[in-house]
Length: 123
Image (cartoon, rainbow, N blue to C red; front, top):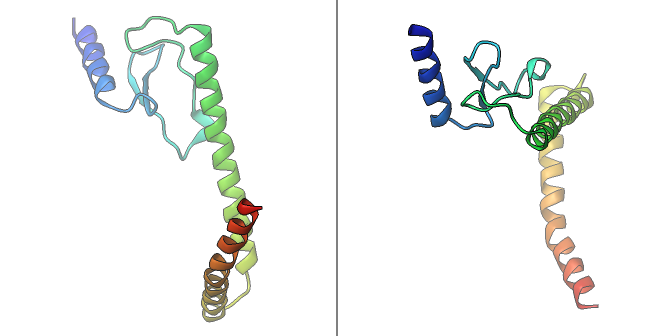
């Protein structure tokens, strides 16, 4: 009846979206969003869109992808924390001047680094 219609609607929605971002919850059959900001609730699906169990190799691949996304988020959070700690206690005007100097220094280094790389490739 109605539940079957809802599940078929959810499956059609699942087919229209990025499968890496949505999957069917095995216990309810409802479409679940994979929210990149919240890694604590990210679950590896055990069934496909048709409700068939996923093979073990596919589950392992999905688990690796989940772990990779978690690791990427952790690294990003660490970098953001380091950046925030680096500028803590420094006035905004001084931060702007220091960032401009760093950008100029890096821009000046680019041609020199490219030249050195070319020389190494020739040798």
